Image (cartoon, rainbow, N blue to C red; front, side, top):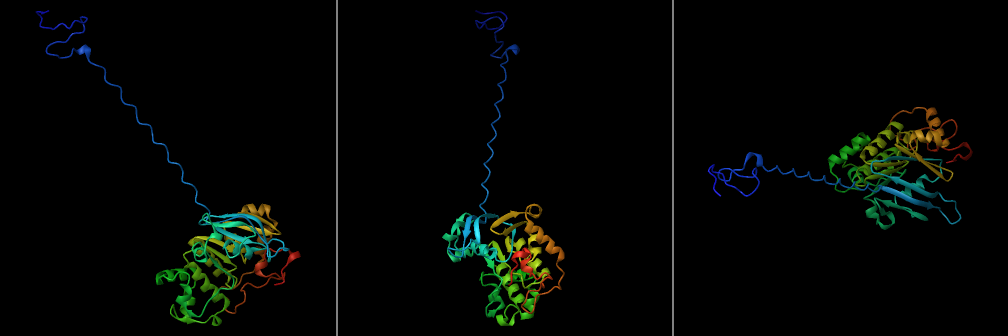
Length: 324
């Protein structure tokens, strides 16, 4: 029906009408749509699993014969990347045996050693060399050039890397004295300390991330020993079979082997729980200083103490002193 006012009836209630040509009445504005809910935050990513220890021993037991007491008994040990661990104890307690087991050079009677989760027993010698390098007390050097000796474990190493290793270990003066990298050396013409320093430099240049020093600095003076150990600790993972008490005190953790028991901890813990470690500290307090330098005679540079002990026997109770 027509309305003189010009409005159009819609058939609804009086307030529900439109004016003009389809323009919405002000009181009929549609409500604004509700804002969309914010998206739920993405779940946090699961934490990455912790890397396996670079070297790990599980229930390690080893004896040198069926009727011998185990040199290592049911030992568990985890060494992570970047660790600095010292192993101490009386002579003959099994420190070097443990080093050989951790290197895969000896097979345990029970238990196993793993490298980053892989059993050492499953690896060939060439593969083992990519995981760890062992420097024994002997400091092996062969007839050949200095360069050949230093690059033996890493044939592709360049002169800058060799120079860096020599500087870090304090071997640069020795190399210069021998005539440089291309000079030929004869082992018999080198002192025990010089051979050890060259062997340490060779191990430093190895691609293996973990180094095990088995009294490898016993013919170096204490200052040279400290420099070598700190260089290896900065290089990567370091396990030291301690020759002097100071090697243990530099380490972040110490494994004390004593009469079939093994105690692992830092310095503060071991002072509380290990009488042997307390003896180590007491021995250190009584050690006299020695002149710096490489031992040129081939004998250990730290003299025997008045008690009759050698430097390597620092942790040994008087009742079981070594005779050699």
